[in-house]
Length: 507
Ligand SMILES: Cc1cc2nc3c(=O)[nH]c(=O)nc-3n(C[C@H](O)[C@H](O)[C@H](O)COP(=O)(O)OP(=O)(O)OC[C@H]3O[C@@H](n4cnc5c(N)ncnc54)[C@H](O)[C@@H]3O)c2cc1C
View 1 (cartoon, rainbow, N blue to C red):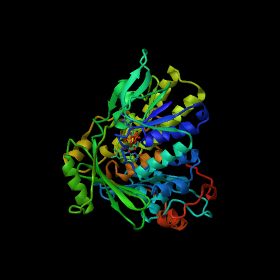
View 2 (view 1 turned 135 degrees about the vertical axis):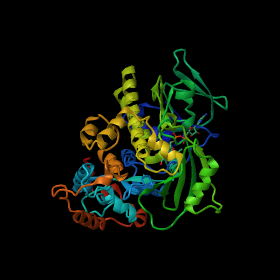
View 3 (view 1 turned 90 degrees about the vertical axis):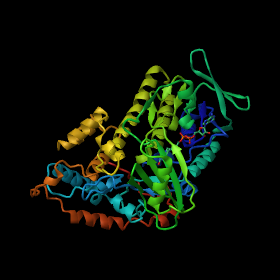
């Protein structure tokens, strides 16, 4: 098997394949071009990345220091909404401890949807919000038996190097060469890759991890691309890292700017900053100036990187004898840092198909349906951030709010919410909101202050006002004392065997 591409997607795929039960039967060669580097951006993850390292038996204590990595308890969204009291909110990775406070949050949201004057902003209800903002690590001391969920931030170049070394150690053959042509069999399957040194690389099966080039699945097999441009406007970014050695927040901060949003991602030694914007509304030069002004670095001599993004997905991720993974299969802009989750899921689905020994048409169709569902569900969740914004300062934000090209599923979800009907049955039953946890939808919609008739609230009934916020504050305040300082913990990351064992997540 050939994995074409040595970015994060290529190495993650190669490692999962090599580690699988089918691995010993595979000879995996990973090919990387000396002329085209890995994209080298992408510094945030969802909590699922933990499963990738656990699966490969790689300790946090090993990979995190090698990648200047930090913990991520969630994302703060600043300035997306102008509704009073909702100008900022935190999207937590809800977990076990939150089971004690989430029902109150949901009750209050439902009451508020029915115009009762109760507190329904998510930030008071989740432990992660406090951990993130107080620069605490989301890993409690051992005597505290409630784990919380978390993701990571990391230097993507260092992560690439780490995965490369691990891959080679675990038997993946690494080859350097630039593909200049692709030869197909008469039936259309890919036969071999011709390299710039006039050698060839043949295989039965190819994984296309060539990034936005989509060399195999796109250029060679001509798989159609499904663009998301009509409801995700952003197609460019500018990145700017700034050294940092102070306290480390365990969160990403996403701040709405004039024509998109900026990220702030803490690593151990720097903050990664960037501005994701729409080139239809703003030039690269203006975006860079706005980001520099936002960071107070207008006159500073700090180099930036400009990037273009192709947002959408391949119609099929498995086509003929080729599976695409990573940017080669598609990309949803990085607002919720979901790209590596797609890589992990796609690679895992391929491993499962190989282990089952089923590479037939039916297996391919199921594979494509599952990956497409993941893309569409995530796209809807991201689009909902833009659709529910209330900024009026630029055409960009006004056009996002006025956008009517929503998927039927997202339209139904928003209609249900705004009719003050519970969305949990629809989310649980798969009628809408696929691919994102229930609590994420509640955090987003309540966090943006999307309540019908917000200006005409009525006093809450006794029943609606039954939850005592002071008790919740107290629980979260006291629980947080069990979590260590983030920077200190990163200097001595515990081994998995020393941690609590329960990782339950009920919502
Ligand atoms: C602005 C931005 C922010 C992002 N933020 C996040 C984030 O926070 N979280 C997240 O999960 N993801 C994020 N991503 C996505 C993330 O960067 C990618 O998903 C991830 O790096 C995987 O990239 P890749 O391996 O698919 O492609 P690449 O890193 O582009 O690798 C492509 C590989 O293909 C090889 N190649 C290309 N052409 C040839 C050829 N002709 N012959 C041989 N080899 C070839 C190259 O050598 C390279 O090794 C972000 C992306 C962008 C653009």
